Length: 174
Image 1 (cartoon, helix red, strand yellow):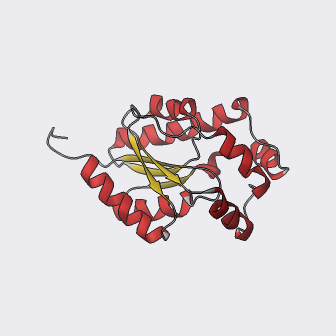
Image 2 (spheres, rainbow, N blue to C red; image 1 turned 120 degrees about the vertical axis):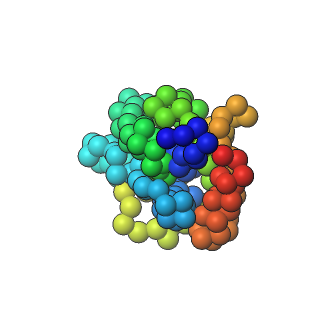
């Protein structure tokens, strides 16, 4: 690959439960023409059972999950295909695990107020993450720091609009 050829980006769409990570990430991957993965698909059965029971994961639970997502990102980065993955990555140290596997990863952090999130979680069906864990997610959340490669987007607009905004942002920033 020539040095002037542009590689497809590896993007991690982050945020708390109910923010719209999966929907926005899937749409963004379509717009970019890159593979998509849902971080929820990387959870162990034990982790899913724990969250389904209303118990937040601890860092011991999260590390193998994050490492697995990091390997997936790394493989796509090495292949040059780029990728978009939806992954909460609520703390800097969690993002650091992903960044260690894929140093060029761009973190797109979706934000919203608690009321919108609670409403979305109340209306969501068929997901193992109960709305009762929202407050623990918000307490865990560490916004992107200035030295992190990424940006924040308000998740209030419709998912299609957010995916367009994200694609435009990536085109300007990368």
